[in-house]
Image 1: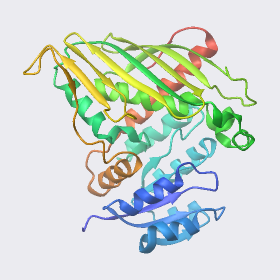
Image 2: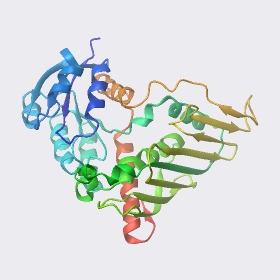
Image 3: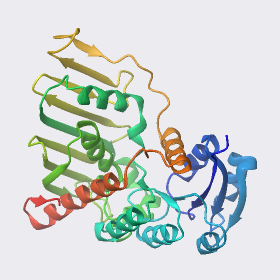
Amino acid sequence: MDDKIQVGLITHGAGAHVGAYLQALAAAPHCGEVILVDPDNAWQADAKRVLGAKLAGVRRDFRQVLRQDPPGMVLVTREARTAPPVIDAALEAGCHVFAEKPACVRVADFAPLVQKADAKHRYLMLALANRTNPEIAAARQIMRSGRLGKLFGVEMHLIADQTRLTRPAYHRQWFAHKERAGGGHLIWLGIHWLDLAMYITGSQIVETAGFTTNVGGQPIDIEDSAVAACRFESGALGTLTSGYYLDKGYHSHIKIWGSDGWLHLEPMRQEPLTWYSRQGDQAGQTVVWEGSKEPRGYSPFVAAAVQACAEMSAPPISNADSLRALKTVFAIYSSAAEGKAVAIP
């Protein structure tokens, strides 16, 4: 394959999902080699084991890499508070950027990066990896086909375990502190469902009203519970419940209603997608999607991102959609703080 590019993996000892990203880059056909930037020397052994001959070098200073031989794409997975200057430097060096979310603690720190990426014709892709799951592609196709008719309403529900919040080791990590992470469950997990709702329906959220709290009472200053009402640009309304409530596992779904039918997504179940329409040759029947759930997760999403950068083809998430997901999350936080509905420009 002639259109392979070098990827710079810029992280540190507390970088999120680094193991998954190493596996993804090892498998990505358009990733020719990887330069690891690891100032804490936390991931070098794993990188050698997973990447093998793809590992072209290990550096301590990302500035040195960007100055000497900028990679085609930079994958940034760092504490949210420290990510924006790294992303800015990578864009300034002419690199495309793939950023682990949330990549900022204020939307005002991310918006100028999107403007710079647009001006330089570079991609700035937030790691919202559920987009490339097969059942999500199928749901988007069903919605875009018009078989559900006019969008009426959306319900989003993503619940994870409270158990992790009880551990002292978790209390010390950066994502348990708002000034370092930007927020809690909503910005770490709920953001995925907000993005998928907009991605599947093709309609952006333009206004929201929300509440956040620490219902479990753990010694953390992030929310473990968030709810929001949303108005989509199409006129439809939606709701989101986002929280750490369980002892283990996940409860999750996205349900979309239209004038001619509905679809129900439960991506973590064996049968992740069912739908119903009054149109077509299956009119009036509840249809269980029979496609394969694989491939899914970080590997296909990262592979799609690297391919887009190598070929200058369509990325798995646009600059604008990356920013929109963050704008929506921070609008919910603003609404919770101000006690009123917040418009999203």
